[in-house]
Length: 122
Image 1: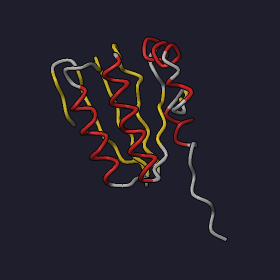
Image 2 (image 1 turned 90 degrees about the vertical axis):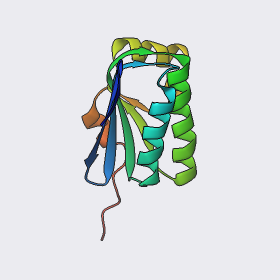
Image 3 (image 1 turned 45 degrees about the vertical axis):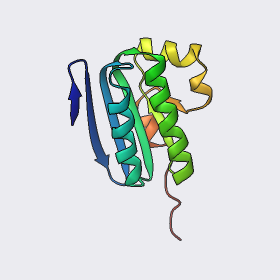
């Protein structure tokens, strides 16, 4: 877990997937912290990276930049990346900036977890 005075980042593994939960304000002063946390997760090449935005109270353009940078890196590494349970404020920012057209956004962690399931072995 990483934290700044106004942001907490928790990383949890759920099987082969990873959830990165952001809580608090995501802005220019902690953009690098978010970017680094997501990069460390992507270095592990999880089957799915879910970014939980349910406890985000402020999401600025710098925060969006960190998410989009992680998306590019995830795409390069073949890791599906999704956003889950955005707070009302985060949801509004994602809609206004049309980031929700670039990154899949799910209303809950449970729905996000179903984004990518490995094919059953026959």
